[in-house]
Amino acid sequence: MPRQALGRGLNALIPGHLRDLDAPKDAAASDIAVAEIRPNPYQPRVHFSEAELRDLAASIKEQGVLQPILVVRGAQGGYELVSGERRLRAVQSLGWTHIPAVVKPAAGPRQMAEWAIVENVQRDDLSALEQARAYTRLMDEFKLTTEEVAQKVGRDRATISNTMRLLKLAPELQALLEKGELQMGHARALLAIESPSAQKAIGLKAAREGWSVRAVEQAGRERGPAGRGVRGTARLVVDLDARAVEDRLRRKMGAKVTLKAAGQGGRIEIHYFNAEELERLIDLLG
Image (cartoon, rainbow, N blue to C red; front, side, top):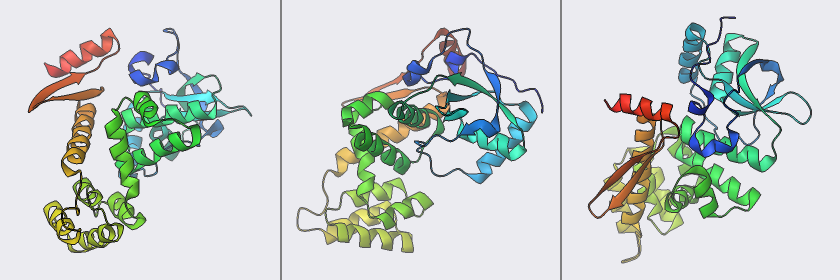
């Protein structure tokens, strides 16, 4: 198996909202057996692109694993995965028997759930529906409030609430959204329709006939009761669009980015957690 480079220091590999996972500065990754790693039962990510996994496997075959995965010691032996499932799957597809990992002590169910959700939200680009299900699971299983979830994942409470509203769509519409036959713009327009039956009928027809978002909005206004067919559209669009922009900037910058609206303008905040990350961002911004 090729030597696997570990790349940057541990602090640069772990998002800021995972500070309780930080190891001492002299912590190092070690190779552990792939066969001893069990998946995180709280992994919120459902869909893994086969094409992306093939590309990642090709990169790892050429360059090695540049960023170690994160695991905790299992109560019954072996390890449980916290973050790095795509890297693990890519290594497995190559037939490699070991992978570099940072090993943490055992953790309880709530901590494992929080770590997995935060890591995926900040680094692995969960779909909006996967985020919605993950937030709901945190609240249902561990009795967290919306505000507590927002604090843990570094989002504002309105964004958490609006993302969770996607679960109010009929299951058929959620499936179309996940398959890409409906887009987030369609989902926002459909959520503004009060009647569940009208929402479902319009959503199915929109996907079948390839409607634009504007066509869905118009259909919602026509189907809803007078003055009550669509509600809260402007606020919902602002919140969800802001989160989408934050996610695009986060992927571009490799750091947490927050939009702060102020009237017709606002500001963009780029977060960093150590001098090395600040230097990287300065270089990126030129």
